[in-house]
Length: 116
Length: 113
Image (tube, rainbow over all chains, first blue to last red; front, side, top):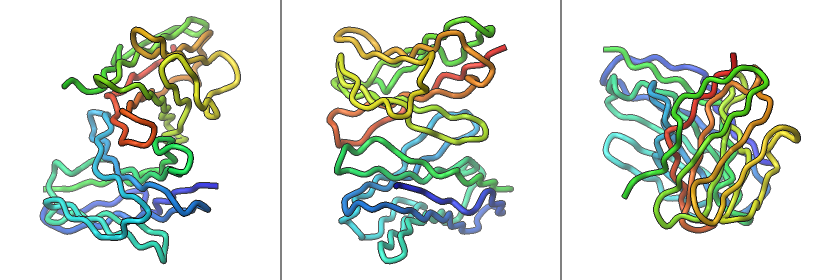
């Protein structure tokens, strides 16, 4: 069975601090996708990244970076030099691509509060 | 290219009424997924449809809920005889193919009073 654990319920940081959001997943499949989504106060779900299980390269996009470690089943997300606009709920998700790639299992989410 | 469009954005229904939530996928997308975000349960998969077919409805409640994605027109999530526990945000996502990236709409927030 698939499971995604985001152990951090809420994180508060001061602007310009770096922050890492943790995500640990469980799956029996060898082929799967991992995702991160952002849900700002306005409520929509904003796609951030999708990573295939065979691609273990870390990725950087501007202030965002992701660390995929298959050995520890983790897919952590780091925001560098956080800004107030980063305040949101962040969800990590998993899908087992053998079947189809968009039946997502979401973690409970981490609330990030960035204070000025 | 417009994104996934959901309407209405907010819907208020009295207990016992029917709720119809609409989702227009991105242009060219024939795969649609519905998710529900309940306050204490988080985001959960409900159903996956491909034009005129239900592929996976393993997350749909057994009663009162149904979904369709007709050949023409938007996908509809229908909730009959709503109860207070149906109050939630309902998100739709669409993808071009079975395993390509899915994009989410802005959600419909259903409130049952």
